[in-house]
Amino acid sequence: MNPVAVVTHGLWAKVQSGQHVSAGYDLPDEVKAELNRKTAEVINDLFRDLRSICTAWKQAWPDQATYNASKQQWLTAFLEAGICKPEQLQFGLMRCRQSGAPFIPPPGEFIQWCQPSPEMLGLPALAAAFREATRNAHPAMAGRGKWSHDAVWHAAKECGFENLNKLPSDASSKLFERNYTIAVRRLMAGEPLQKMPLALPAEVSVRRTPQVGNSALAAMRARLAGR
Image 1 (spheres, rainbow, N blue to C red):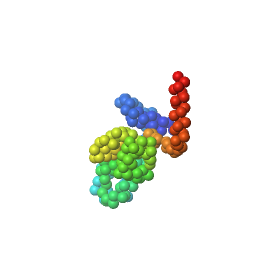
Image 2 (cartoon, rainbow, N blue to C red):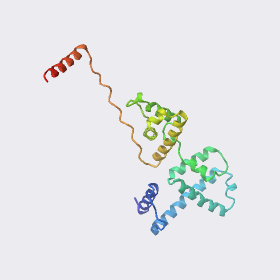
Image 3 (cartoon, helix red, strand yellow):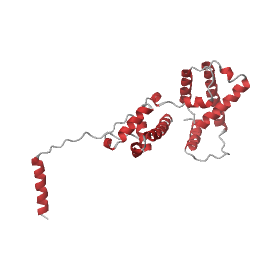
């Protein structure tokens, strides 16, 4: 990892963990220069792609001054929303193409597009994941539930199995939606999820006959008689 990546990764980790970053914190000059260069490349490429997709882009950016000011506003919005990976921008561009709209979307809408749906990451859709979680959270399924992905298990554990069982359906579904959305974001960010439990071994079949029972009873009586 190069020095720029080391410094920026450490700084972003502090922000994510809630640690205080002093207002006087100053990046090394070479890091600043590299960040500015790379950031400019990313934003310029993004705006070029948006102009190619949205044919009526001049409605939003009628002149160069407005165009340049918008780049700064979009960058600020990305930083505030935690959009910091090229993959996230690619999801946004994909949904922008799919929308078919000729106009440039507001930054907030584009940021929403940057958040991949579960299906885009190969996960169950929200409704299917909720059904799976509520089914496996039932006491009768203890140790026997089959989980399709760590993200579903993680969201269910964050909800609490008891909540999934006892809350009204609308309340439990909203609770699960919140935790599943967070789990998907954690997956996208490369953050760890709670791991699914390992499958239990197949149930061992024990031969039960009257002779086995009588032998066990006789052995117990013998031990008691010897006291």
